Length: 286
Image: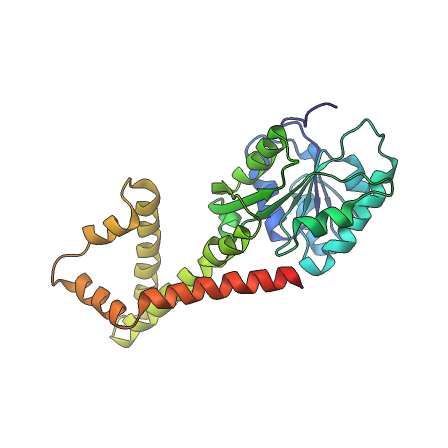
């Protein structure tokens, strides 16, 4: 059996043409992948038109793209993932026994490796290699954080193929050791952007209550968030040290952090991440 094609020449199929699929495709094209090597199956006319505008091939048939591809990305809502997988398995019943089945990469939240394998098993009992991915919405602007998990059957070439694809939209691409850790990643980076949006939302509201015009408060808060994030990424210091660097003894920042501590800030964050993690596990079981 031949190894998977390099990402730049691999035939990539997307089942589902929503925002995340569009972000990944845009990142792939920006990194040199040929539009002719990408195909998208999408039932909705509006989404299909958006994909076609990128120059890639489009269809309404899941089976059509699955039979053609070296790598298939399941980018549909979890509730329709089973149907999409079964369409793929149907398409693969004609694949010759000496030809490797496509690598399957799923970004459908909560759907387990075991379920994906079961649904994509062909009539002859062949099972594709499967990778699960938890991306996050900053991938839409090329600043994503993605975690990946695969079983022991994954090859090094397949691992590299999946990593390269996600790296097109993710600045942090991490493989986790256990599947259940994807639930923790969901609570951290998957849901994490919303935590920061909420924080900035409340910062703006607080400043406005104290008299600052809302447009000024909004611009200052957004840039503060962007600048702090850039410092986190580019500095060799850990977050705790960066916090200390900006905190003068008995100064303004110290006063705010003491207030955070008195309000149980650490416990609030712990409970939030734990709640999102548990909910991710619950959705996976459903």
